[in-house]
Image (cartoon, rainbow over all chains, first blue to last red; front, side, top):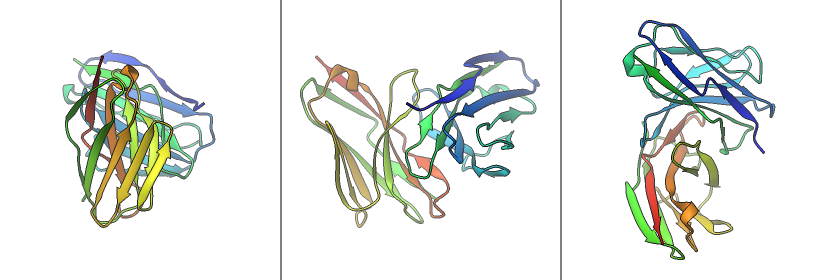
Length: 111
Length: 110
């Protein structure tokens, strides 16, 4: 059973606010990912990390940042939220294969 | 860059067999994966093909032809609970970046 957690599950905030979406996994996986997914649409990779102190941007241009100070923790920060950031954010981890374990997601609404 | 194509929707009846195709264009290729996602849920891994041929896992099978840049997911003995979206995904030429297809919404009718 995969153990990957995201908080909050739902968030409604106003424009201009700074927010951090949390993601933690207890499987000791080195690889972690953040995806953005609009309803009924594909997943877009926005950030990934292959280990502590290693972060890279994905294909989707994003105004967010990430950090990887501990193996188990991979938070995503939006410095100034905008309505265009309204979406679902999914965190995932993997050990070395193509099998990714996904968290339950954070549904973000920016008003 | 990478691009993947899948049919947007497929409908079938319980007990039937359905095939969901995926074609891809990549500057490099490290394998094709399939994920299932129910409405409101997170994607879950179904299968991976790194080499040509068929991989079977219970009612689900996945096939890859690298020379044709093509793969498919085969679902047998369809059940109502199989109604979901199915995504194919590839890793890019550096093997670091994952790209997902647009997804195929499967509806299983009684």
